[in-house]
Length: 143
Image (tube, rainbow, N blue to C red):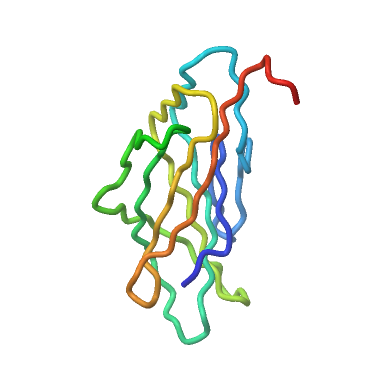
């Protein structure tokens, strides 16, 4: 299993047919007039692809951490790993599965890029890693 893509959204749900219902998908930049910026939830949306000989799993273990622009770990969301259900798309080629995970109570207290790192088990027994970035900017910044 390997990650095909992942993104952040304000809200997301998945349909039984592999479709997504997403609000503010591919969230990368937040413009704020003051700090902190708080989210009740943020969704991580991902699609995994399987090789032909690989069995399709019903769940995947994920690890998340959030690092501030200064490099400080703000949150170790799932130190021991979090098992997340994934939905396979029946009959699809390539063989794929989708996942949505809601992260609750996200608190961003600095301007600049915040890195959300997601790790998952790779088929060779190690972990694969992807970084998703939320850049918090002020309304006063020049575009």
